[in-house]
Length: 149
Figure 1 (cartoon, helix red, strand yellow):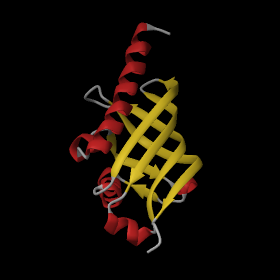
Figure 2 (spheres, rainbow, N blue to C red):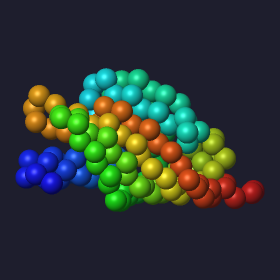
Figure 3 (tube, helix red, strand yellow):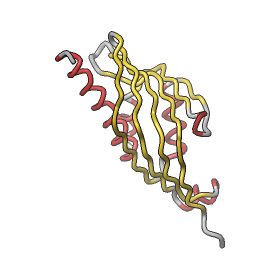
Figure 4 (spheres, rainbow, N blue to C red):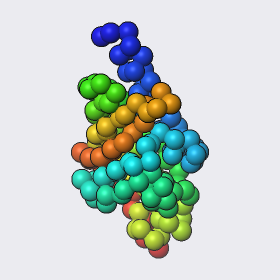
């Protein structure tokens, strides 16, 4: 791998690390900054929806996770470059535990998911790599149901 590609590889890994940290610490400005403005988020393979745009995505994610405890981990990136863009697949695991009110609304206290993020990154004018497209697929989901009264 060429030296400039090594730097890009590491920069993409840094972007995804910020994604996980900012999401889990609820640093919403930092989380928004890992995406392009025209982000397309597709969670339909994991039972979700397609969301267009960074602001709409931020509103959707905050609405679901703002009062939840989360831990996102990604592993083993497969990165394929094409000029100033790259397609990346990350193995992932996430843990979500909702507060009592949200758990009662959705019928589950939490979940642990295992799967993959399929992402398209672009190198932006400021030199930062950002996620332009993201698709979440799940292989397995362990559900923690709300305890019966």
